[in-house]
Length: 387
Image (cartoon, rainbow, N blue to C red; front, top):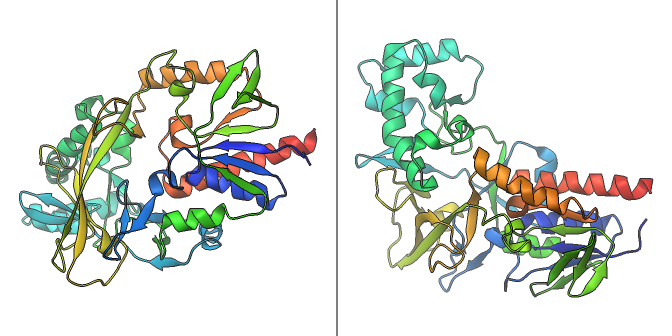
């Protein structure tokens, strides 16, 4: 086993997961975090009314992988909560993901035939991509699917990503699924879902509470030169895992990587309830994508007050007042080609590894982020063991 300290830049979910796995395996870890809090975009806090607020928008842990759920349960007690999400369509509220209730509601005269057609043609699927329904052979199902596409997904996606939906990567549409039943559950295929009772920040703090993990609260200066890596002017030969933006790391040598950003307007209202669901999407609103009500997400029973956030998407710009934080990578061919230029240059530094959403320019759900970190852990330990 190496006696060198492994360095991790970024104490979000990916960095914290890797740090804990390595520490439990006997490795010393130095993890850097430039923010005044741990957890990255998972950061949450209890406000003055005792409501658990998620600063960077609603996060719900969900997975169908028991080993991922078993891992996080070591660090937090989970409150099992199937979050209800609705969409406001022409001032009417319908379930998300779209299910058979939307067939009954928007195609009442053909509902029975449409549901029969869907069940007979996709008998084993738990979720059917909207594009498959649009391109099916049944006219009535096509018409209903096109209505849903136009009123639920088209404007929302264009607003979210800042480009016409026709120019979006097909994988984005493939993730838009229709549930072929009446189940009202935003994550219908995930067995394990919920929120840590004391929040994600506390969960990540518990992950990083280990005698072999040292947390340094500042943004380190990283220098890459002549196949050598330096942190705060010190030569580092041990493995380094970087969770930040690769374009910023290399001084935007190949241009700024495009991201979508979000701006949240938080409001606290002296009422018991603001809306009938944890989250309501607004596809036709010109600027707002969704409104979240946090005590419903967390299943809290605080009376007389509630806190909401109005979510606005925008183009990421480091100099913007509202949209200066990168959230979602935009995975089209041009952007991936641009990203690969950075990856190729960083490949000259064998001890320097990329980890997580920003560094790998890839969207991860929380369980995917944890599993990705687990994979990096196994690869590193195997490599070290063979040396």
